[in-house]
Amino acid sequence: MVLYIKNMVSLRCKNRVQAELANLGLEFKKIDLGVVQLSKKITVTQRKCLMDNLHGSGLELLEDKRSILIEKIKNVIIELVHYTDHLPKNNYSDYISNKVGYDYTYLSNLFSEVKGIDIQHFIINHKIERVKELLQYKELNLTEISYKLHYSSVSHLSNQFKKVTGLSPSTYMHQSQKRWNNLENT
Image (cartoon, rainbow, N blue to C red; front, side):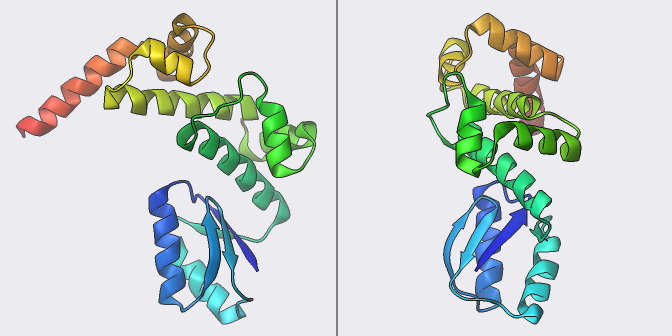
């Protein structure tokens, strides 16, 4: 049996789901972002308990097919941008379509209708979040980040970063470092 879970976007979320399943005595075969493959079917009572327990953590069991599909799209993008080093060089649409198993035009229209943002902007927002993380780790410089996330140039990355955040990457880093120093001094 497969369960789909909304807002399950990190290792912490996966651990939370795993703990709730163990708490209810439910065995699983596999847990991925947004998806849990259970060893056997669960009862209505178990489903209700799981739903209630997950809700307290900001997670939600999905039952509507459209919502499940949207969550699949989001999870493919989040996993791709945040957890892999192999971003498609130029065609996210084919990658998403292949991973989710639907025509990209259908996915794009559904995503835009339900989320109020197109898939491309969702990808850009997550790429910028990833840039922020990488800048804060200070392991890579902007040129290396640009290459890693397949931007055509540092200038393109910087322009997109400023368009999304309102700050240049260097200003963001400066303000971030300032906040961090203030926290350490309090």
